[in-house]
Length: 81
Image 1: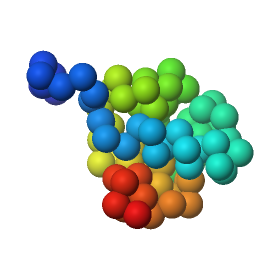
Image 2: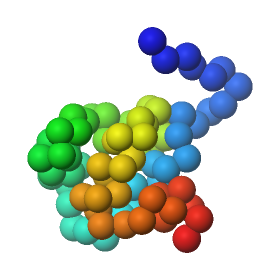
Image 3: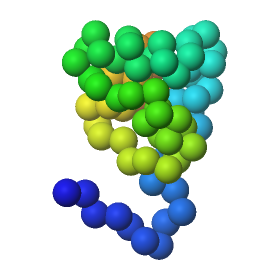
């Protein structure tokens, strides 16, 4: 089971960039969820919302899948681009 870091308000650093890339790609949260399933990455629409709001942690597999579906480099999602 994951450990919650109590001193942080945000659970991830990629949420805002995921939202930006999703909107730019013209996808709804539900559409992103369905496309992720084609990569065997299962993230429901509600979880995508929580990720974008930085309320939920994101696994490396989920981040990689989102980058592929959204057609953006990993560096973009991490704000390095």
